[in-house]
Amino acid sequence: MNESPQPEAVGVILAVDPDRFAEVVDALRRAGLTVTGEQPMLGTLSGTVAGDRIPALQAVDGVESVDLERIVQLPPPDSPIQ
Image (tube, rainbow, N blue to C red; front, side, top):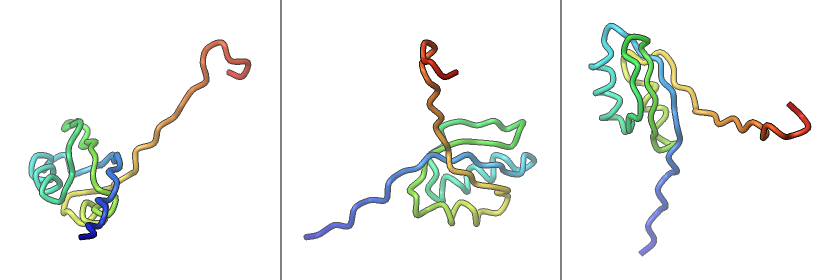
């Protein structure tokens, strides 16, 4: 039996309608998002989702934007370039 590999989870940052925050977050969870942080007053949240599920998140009513999380690595303090 060959099982297809699961899509890799990616970090995402979402902006949603703050007036419907709880409703939109529930819909995003049903669409496959694992919520890792919520900022209801700002209408933003973060989470992880299988990469192939991003279009499903974008299609949720009340979602204004979905951005991939980016990691920035700063050089050590004693590095010659600051």
